[in-house]
Image 1 (cartoon, rainbow, N blue to C red):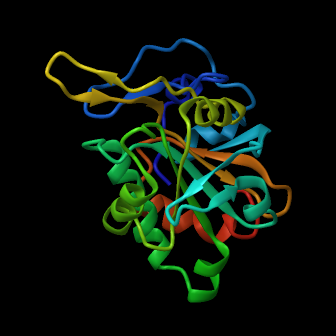
Image 2: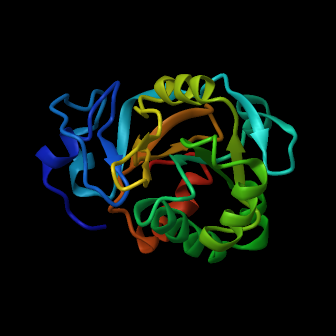
Length: 218
């Protein structure tokens, strides 16, 4: 595992994790991350002392069907990430890194792991657009979810992730500010107990997934 500066980890933020403008840097945040184990600063993964409860979130998947996050991932190791398909850098890189690690798992373990990508730009990220994007940026087996923005935002807040409504810039581009963290939910407790920042690599995920599949600390 790569070593991190303890202060940098602490500043990931708590109830409103640092917002990332894909392709445009980060918003400022001075709120400390609550519930972080002291030894987590030396790992790509941050193990939370106070895990997040899986949000009560019902959205629409890439097949146009209702998807109840709690119900359909119950008892399964699950990675959840909020982002948008028009992101030029952070989102596709994060999903690509997870996909690379995912492909290294055995078929049986790939069957267990649930990877859920929830859009922060639902107006443009229709179920069809999400499905097409995930085939290239991630893996066809990954779940893409869309819906109305207030519902998506409320679900993110339950996980301590802040997202803002997409904003049109002067040049006509649309930027979505969102927390760029991946949260791993345990198959034992269904709680979000491990957090990864946007600097986590494919090797980091490949090293940690075997333990996450068992609900163990990475």
